[in-house]
Length: 394
Image (cartoon, rainbow, N blue to C red; front, side, top):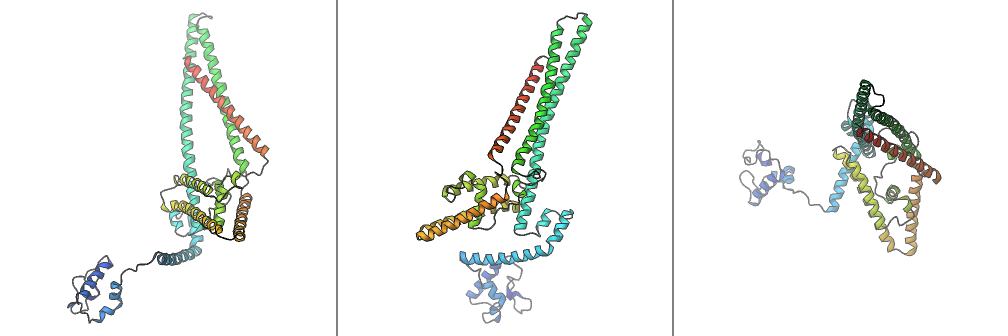
């Protein structure tokens, strides 16, 4: 409201005595009155013109430069982060207990978290939902396919049994042991036996194939990983995507985004950075498709891309500066980068168990899995052929 509309004034402003939703409405009103020399309700010699309220209305929103705006925003964000961090330290333990007991849900619990804890919690829950959805979808598809196949096979077996019963009844009624039905009965009985044999072989090899799949996973992870329901490989081994823009973060990203065969190549080249960015975007996009519609969950994934992109820019800036340095200074910068890259590779090797076995074991595992898969495929084809042959006899 206009400060001159206060009820205590004898001749108060009535045109703007009701509350307005925007400050600039009162600002324009006062500017107009003042530029016109004032009026009976707003005399220019009134001390109210120098009061805090009127001065505040007449002060427009400051036009900050991008740099000043960034500093002001950073200060506000810093104060907000400190308040949230203090709240997390005071109340997070109790909130975690209530969450584990089911008293509060995910959204309520997230209000007590900030920073890395919040990002980690969001990613863990998103992964749990994704794994659960994928498993349910895959199991549902497999279940429906198996139900249809079993239904068709049961129907085929019932048809064969009915046909055999009809032929045997007809043969018994005719009294002729060597009648024309003997060949048909023998063919149906042979088809029935072949169905049994091929079905048992295919089912047995499916069980072996499942065991072989577990062996493949356990080859690159310890035997407890498969039992860690709802956890990805990265989460199981305690890996968290970097959240700080730095040269160190760039090399940590590179250990997961660059093929190991290219680790000794031009890692910092424009082409290499472009390929790593594409790899990361494909990973994030696949993760995003399985997330809930929460903006916070999506924001966590977007932050991963932003951190890597900014770290790439940092590396590029460093290379451009090095190109303008003296040979000695440029070599010093290259040596520092090599140390960072060596440290990132060492951390990767220490965390993950990849390539801890000799190559010959890799080849043997691949051969065993391939042999089992080929045998299972052949058994399934034989079973399908037996079904087709049996159907043709009906």
